Image (tube, rainbow, N blue to C red; front, side):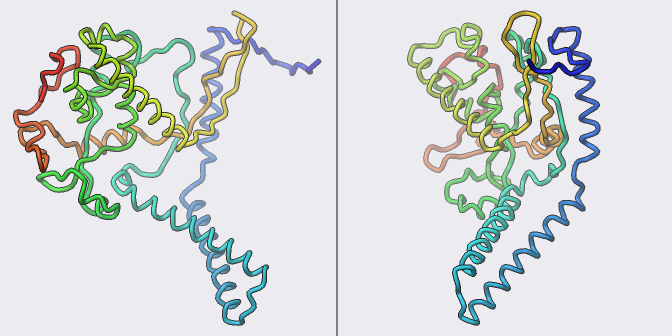
Length: 313
């Protein structure tokens, strides 16, 4: 029989939820004070540099003396691995140049998802939900970034400089609810459907006149969105520990949703996007090299339900 610790009250109830969150907030406050400072990060980089220089010195001396033993080969392999890791870390810093304005500071945050879904982004279909999801913007990408990736021959050039792009976080959010501002939504709306996972929960509200073909294509796009979200989650690999707890409703444990996650400042992400927003729906603003202006007469920014299906160009 497992020993029951003093003060252990394992059954979760609605009355305990507020106390549980308060305790987590106290723990988060203590954890924030323990987060590594910039000095610690600088010291870590310095130590890595010293190790790399040391391995490089060993390699050069061994080559000069012609004593490439098995042990030295092992040292060379380790050195190359260190150099490769350093190269990719520095490359990642360079290729993410546009979002660098957001900063690299993170904070611990508890997702408010314990209990039934609530908030302005979820719930039954209503104008407030649609409006909340509209503020997902396009932004320009610098010539330097596009040339570094070798995409200057395929990227969409903007008439006032730079190229059309978006932060990856908005691509994933578009997969949940595709904003009327997203160019992907407009292209899909031409076929009479939009790839929105949230909207597919209420098809009669958002897609009242969809044909069988449009529903099938929408399903294909939803599969794409699920894969985008899966790969995004795997890429970031959130390793926050999620525990379980008992309830007074049945014998099966439930997930305790109060796990702290390490998050960026999303307000800064939104500020950066707003400050660099591009209205691609201006008359004749972006021009396809073969088919001409993408939006020769602009585009009406309306919720999908208000748009006549298949009539937008």
